[in-house]
Image (cartoon, rainbow, N blue to C red):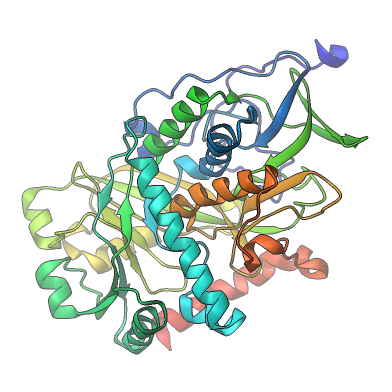
Length: 465
């Protein structure tokens, strides 16, 4: 037993609803899944390689077994002939990848195309659009694999105006998409949206994007697990990184069952990144809680009242947006932002807010029974865009994270890009690849105070002003 005191694998631990990545030392050890609809309906998790039980060595170590980490492992093995070893603290795909809304959109962060242009100029924005277009095609190819049966529901993405006043902005964004990027977006009036798509009673209209697909979040993750292991990757669950030492160009990652030695580390821990994991990832993300709930199966009369004729992604235009969809089994799923701290996550008021949001959109569902309710941490970067990069050229450390809630699709490409960087291949010259995640610096201790103030302003802007 390493160090003579730490057991090789702790017993299975229960899910901790109050886990908070800013406060807690780490995500735990061998914890069970959050009680999500995805885990409850995916069937048994696929076989993995169990915990680390002895010191070992690997070509590349990937920390985190979510979508990004698994995509990295898949592409390292398939495209570059490397044999990655994936370390997961808890159950496979335990974090974001089994707690998200299951919506794949043609985006990689929180910024719109017009904001890309304002920040980087038209040429870089067009290159970014090419990148996310390529990413969506990769995602489509992956979910078409026989190994990944994730109940895909294509049909485009509906960006739904929750008030009349935001329609002008949607029209401008539609013009940017079509005129600058040659994209086939279109504006839908309230009447057209209600007649042919969905009777969201808040809707003043919508911007429709051709690329948008809903998936079953856990089935996607479990499919990635099977694919990665078939290609030769090892996936070790119940193996948290409890210490990280660099010496002579080697990285030594200490787990409860043994130390893994490697030249290269790829970090894919997203909103569940421990503060003390490594100095290159410390305070580089703002973890934000997102709440989600799934109703009981809707009756035929309820379905008719909701008038929902599409099963692809729906999001509204609030700053703290609602994302919602009709599931294949005729349950309704909806999510939005939640508590500021993990300690407050179980407060009933957050679920009540989500219920009211659903009732505003679909009055027939007011007070409807719920089958599932959960929350999870979203990896929001300080400039609202992800990074896939090697932050320090003197050290073989890479990371991919910061999607801001848009990682279901782009994580596949992010993993592929990180694998290319690890293998020494060039990636496109884009800001998300050639700069590290920014830090809040001296403001770091006050981030949550700022978050509370921002939430108040967002409410005023979205609902009152």
